[in-house]
Image (cartoon, rainbow, N blue to C red; front, side, top):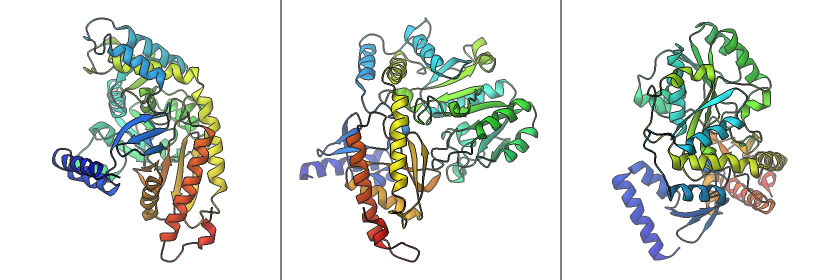
Length: 428
């Protein structure tokens, strides 16, 4: 790295410290004060000329970075009409809503566009209240956002403590346990709103038992609960199916969409609902509004994102790539036995659970040293999360596996203390 680059990096860290926050500046410094300046496909470019293979991105980049179809659509919209008056009809939002409704489970026909996943969660909670469903039920280790309503159902005291009191009448149950869910919902017939992920992402890539989602839907129907499925991270092909609920043919009352809906270009999210569930918002267009929600620019990205997934079969590609990655990673478990306890996931949402929390941070740093980006899990400190794009080539998959092997061998060599396997168990 050149002296001038170091100087610019240090100046940027100082700017962050003075105007963004000392914590964010400290984190940037810990990671090497790397400055990202460009991206394309599965690669992120930095100011010092490095290229990072992006297996992170928190689930956003199912299309990769700057997919040409999405960029072209956004650029054309920027050149014509990026923001709407919110008074007249606007054709791009209509087209994007129709395209999204066409690929959601049957009956989910009404789309409310917002700017972020947390806003989609808030819209769903407000919609539930409009129906009299004020008893909120969500799962421990779930993640639905950090606005006040979304945080109320994000069952992690670490993020909640500073902002209490949150929404009342909120119950958290064990993910995957139908008995606990039944007890919570049956206690408030006709008053409950259940919010769950089909696979917990930030919870450490937790895949529920077979039949769980179907059981959840049955319990909600039996006791008149509104079922909201949060597919902000899992939807749009991430799990190797269009939606996580597809695995059990479940149709929720409300589906939350985000991350990949952006096409990796413009932030956009949505709440999609059945006609019955959406009725309060449908009747009164001013009941829940957002100045920038559903802007032409964002909807151009969303429309292009959906059409690109269809045109390039990114769902199928995610399924095939995920099957290969899971197979390759599981085959290495014996090799990594002193470090990694489990490999799990579905499609291109994969978690590596480590025996020790401290090894996760070290693995992130070792991978950064090898020009690979990866994410930890906010609600599971021992889990590394892989959310690579569906546009990876076989060569890029091979490269990642080689670099991961090398990084974990380096982590292993730093280990001390009892309970750690011999170095031979981690040889690539």
